[in-house]
Length: 73
Length: 135
Image 1 (cartoon, each protein chain N blue to C red):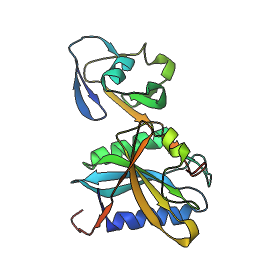
Image 2: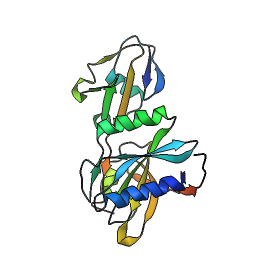
Image 3: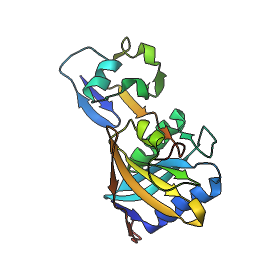
């Protein structure tokens, strides 16, 4: 199966994969801290492990970004 | 890491415009140089915190991709404190692949510095300002 993950070609030997497995293979260390879109549609965190991907799907993920000056060290 | 003079100035301008609130966004790399800026909304609208809107993050990512650039740095401002990562910045730096750029406007002095933050460890990256009209 060939997908695009964050714009880059992603190839897997398996014919069936879930979005969660794609994230795992993309070395996402904190899957709970990413937002995911499958073909441009958000996938809820609780559905990542149940949502299958298909040939030529596009998976995009971004990390939560936040912080701030409070508690400066 | 190199950054164009134009982008550094636009970074500072965004921080000045949002002050006293924190400004935030992405910087895009082209030909190995920080040569693009994507201003994002600070959802926290706070002088002490920032967070990105995921919808804007995806939109910026696709826009950068369409331009042949990649979003390799995240920036935010510290309107009244130094340009170094706070404890909160370090705790929330989940994407170790991004360069974290901090703009300080503290005490009327403008400063821009960059850091890698991996597993709670902070390493400063020197920013070299370049002037190249081709970028």
